[in-house]
Structures are given as C-alpha cells and as structure tokens.
Image (cartoon, rainbow, N blue to C red; front, side, top):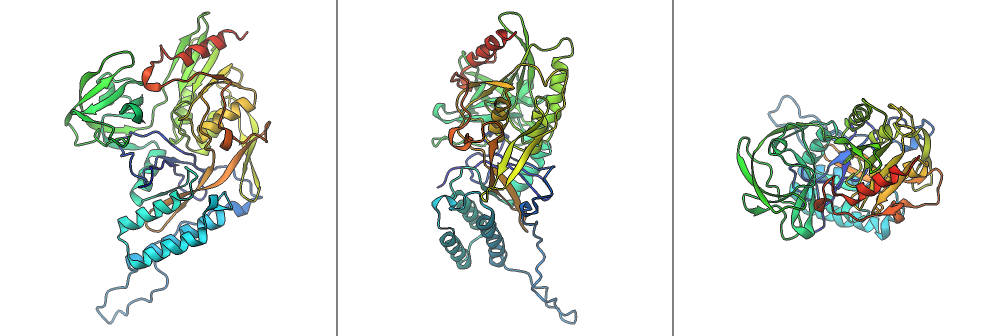
Length: 464
C-alpha cells in the first residue's frame, strides 16, 4: 500500500502548472492515492520558449481501425480495454521520460519501470487495477508532488478549481490530525449546515454518529457526506473546551472555498488586517482577497496585515500571481526545468488601498506547500514581509498537466523555482525558514489564543 497523494487544480487548455494541495475534507476520502485537489494555468508564457508546450490532449477516436463495410451487420470495431490502457500508459510513460524535472528520475531506472508496467498491462488488468497501477507508477518517482488522477478525480478537480464545489455534506474544509485522531476545521462555507450549527475554524470533529472520523491508520473516513436532509451527530471539540455533541442536517453545498478575514487590534491599539489563505486552487481566491482588502480598509487604512498561509496547500500559478500583485510588482524569480531553461515569474502590481506598502507578516508552517511556499518566500525575498511560524517542508516543484483520452490526467513535476534576490537558496531542500519560529498546533488554539498571531501583532506594533 502506498501513501495518499495530493494534487492541485486544473487548467482547461494547453499548459498547466500545479502546486501541491494537502488539505482534505471537502467530503472526499483522503486515503485514496487518486485523491486530488487543485491545479493551474499559466497565462503569460514567453513566446521564446515553444519547447515548453506540453503534449496535447488525446482523443478517444481510434485512427488505425478501418471502417466496417456498410453492407454487413458487423459492428464497428473498438479498441479493447488493454489497447486503450497501453496507449494511455505509453503516453504517460513517455511524458515522464521526456519532461520530468529530475533527469535521473530520483534514482529509478525508468526504462525498467516502463517494461514492468507494460508487461502487467499486457497480461490483463481491470480498469480499476490499471488506474491503481498508473497511480503507483507515478508515486514511485518519489517527489511527493507528481500524481496520476483517475477520470472521476480529474473531473472533480476541474469543478473545484472553477469554484464550483457541489456536493451533499456539512460544508467544511478540514485537515487531518492523525496523531490525535481528529480532523480540524480550516474554513466553514457560508450558509452551510456547519455554519448554521455554529461550527468554527479550529474546531475539531472527533466522530460522526459515534464512529471515529479518523481510522487506525490516520486516514480521514468519508463520513461527513451522505444523503441530503439526513441528520448526523458530530462529536466536536473547540480548543480549550471539552467534547460536545452537535446535530447537523446534511445539505447541498456549493460555491467557492471562502477566504476569511477580520480586523485585529495590536496591544498598542493599531488596526491590523488578518486574511486566512488555505488554497490558491480556487480561481475565485484572488477576487476574494481583493474584496477582503477593500472591506478591511473601508473605514480606515490598515497599520499592518497578517497573511496566514499556515494551511495553504498551494494551487494555481495564475491565482498566486494575482494575489502577489496586491503587494509587489515586477519579476520575482524564475521557474527552471531540467535543462536549466528559465521562465520569469512576473507579477503585475495592483495596489488596493495601500496594500503595496502596508507592513506584512506572513505565517507559514509544515502544511504550507508549493505555491503557498513560493508565495511566502517571494514576499520575504522582495523585502515585503516578515515570516512567523514553522519551517515548511520544501515542496515547490511546478507540475504540468496532461489529459488522456479516457478523461484521466497526470500532473508531472516539470520545473522548480529560484528566487530573484537569493538565487542560491534552494527552497525545495530548505523549505521557507521563518524569521521568528513559533510552533502552533491548529487544533489547539483559536484566533484569539494563537501565540503566533499574538507575536505578529506585537511585531507590527513595533513598526513606525
């Protein structure tokens, strides 16, 4: 059994860039290696780099089968499952061979891997076994980022990136805390059953109808989804309080992942904005951040701003780029492939009521991944932000997406990132190291009791 993977969101046309998404709980089972979350599109590729264009999307129409004569009743020939499986496999295997970021395939003999899976397919596999084999093959690359998605997961990914979540559940985005056998709420969807029941970010869900929500292996069990209008009893715990029972009626949940925000006050009386960013894998996030900045400054300018990236699993290049534009401008680094070809990471600035000059604190932690990491590191590299939290894991490969004839999709690590002002820093190895280290467990604090938030307010209090 190999561990679960997390992908990011999809962009529907030619070129996709992906960053990793580690949050779970949109009602999707988190134990399956095929689980995905989010992707991205690059809207400003330089025309000087035509070799960066990924393989095209393949159609399912066979071109090597002659038409059946109309004079007979013989049905049109169609490819057998193994024939289609082989086509998908060969295109996937060659894509990795020709484009994968690490030329040594992280120590794998990729030719031998190809021979192994080719023989398994020729010997006969069910569709389910075939998809499991492709997931496993990409997992063996060992970069903790590249992923193969089954058709149903690719379709769900597309809807999520478009901000078109549509499922029956309670309306929370959660993260698993396996060591304490719970899932903890990151955000609550507006007007959802969870909101109506009074659930809040940082609350933990321990059980559903008495059944633990996290199994003995630390995986999130899919108990929150179910039939519409059914009532479930949650065992919920708010930090600092004992467990309680909450009855929630499942309902249809739609819309975008929310971006919570509020105004906090420093010990010295300064007004500081707080924005929680849990993903860049929803194409509405940049618009929501713009609205948050306008609302936070509606009555008075901000004296500082806290961008909480501690649960940001990354997402789309385009979304991260647009949000960065509220705070910085210009080239901020380069994406680099295995042939050391560089592609500039250009940011177009768009000041929102002083956002390009307001003092910033960016908060990071082990759950800050991929474009969550790049976003945070770039703001410090540009001299715009002070970093508080814990060192990130270092997972900044950019993935390119490839669609196959059956609707499946692969995200393959294609580039890494080099910051503009400190190009020798390797964030893939070091992660983003905070200026001030304050470890915090999300499920053990609230916004009001969070020591890292308190330290951020004290830091911003001291800025003249």
